[in-house]
Image (cartoon, rainbow, N blue to C red; front, side, top):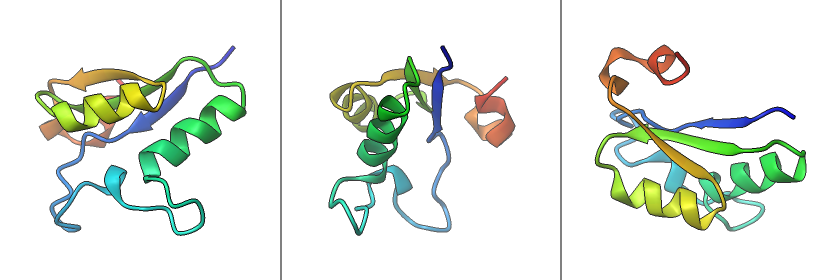
Amino acid sequence: MAAGLILAAGESSRMGRPKAFLRHELTGTTFLQHLAAEATAAGLAPVVVVGRVGDAALERAAVAAGARFVANARAADGQLSSIL
């Protein structure tokens, strides 16, 4: 079985707010909820959300969506640090 990985450790500096909490226009859920549901429906397990250290809101949302939360202590090093 393959794991689902949702990378959400970015600073969202250009967007100004976390992309994970934006509403999906078709489902009305957040992007995080939508991605977690799609990954689960595809048979991926576990579904893991990678976020920044101390991002309690993202951690709560990940758990509520049925995913695990993993904090990337090196998030400032860029996207690749979330998968290494």
